[in-house]
Length: 126
Image (tube, rainbow, N blue to C red; front, side):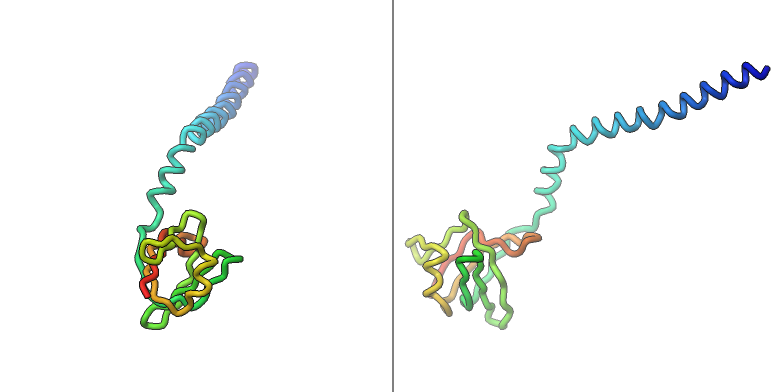
């Protein structure tokens, strides 16, 4: 009887150890297949593009930054990337060109992100 109990205890322990290992292998497989889903989920959680109008109060090309103040006095820091389209009418400009356009009126299309508001396009109107 004692030998049978020992065999039963050993078999039970082996099964208990096998279940967590099987679960871990299943989790690893899920993690590998979810890499693509994580990117998609990240895209779905992005904020919608917004548009803002105001006056340029500061431009810092070294930090890729432009500050726009809305008519009600709220300043917005805009991150300007190499993909940001900056235009005055039909003329394309660079962020460095904007340093001479302080107090000009602009319309900025941007995407709110964790790192800040990222300008997609900047249109100078006056």
